[in-house]
Image 1 (cartoon, rainbow, N blue to C red):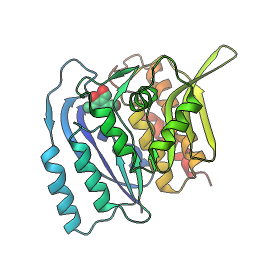
Image 2: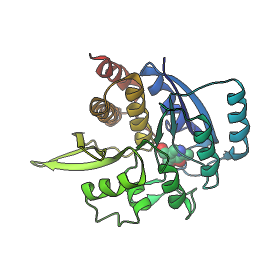
Image 3: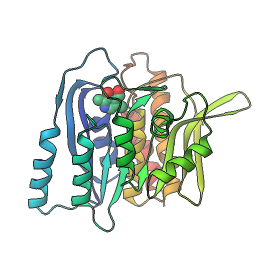
Length: 275
Ligand code: PXL
């Protein structure tokens, strides 16, 4: 069985980061280890948050994992608690990266044109440097604009993908891309691997929740590590997020802090299990 380690925060409440990545990657049939960058009472999209930064713990955890002789088939980074952690995480990647290790960097920084409240000005530049060691990067449009210094209101998806591709060694993916056909609004992801463009869309739902990007990258990474080819993995990740958003919109008791992904897991598993 493939083994992934995901490095991101543990938000006790919020259905994001580790609480999203662990169930999705496990559902893909891939072992998922977690290295928390911080513990938060709740994600920073809610009013107030108690945060315990774990910067000092990352290195000793890595050293102990090294003593155990553990290897990872993939390393997947998400929300990093501060810009200073980025160097330590780059060292972790260098230490654990083998010839076939796939490095996924989700440059979690913001949404709807704005950077998350707990992050600092130097964060996008540091994130660009982390993307340089990645095989797959998965920014949303806000994060792509922050890293490329582009205006959130005026972007061209293909041009942005060309520029993002220059930041990493492998494949650049942008999430939250919209497409309109005959009055229907679709949302999904576009990607460029240096040779081919990919696009996958599904019906846009009237929900705006934190954690959707985390679920997307987890679903993409889980499917790729399971052995599903990139194109099908992209499709499965878009369908999974769309179905989670649909279930959220249909839930009269919906909790605005995150999407209802739990009941979409069986469909995701089915989709990536098809021969
Ligand atoms: O889902 C992105 C995310 C992850 N982790 C933390 C967050 C957010 C978004 O608000 O605050 C701590």
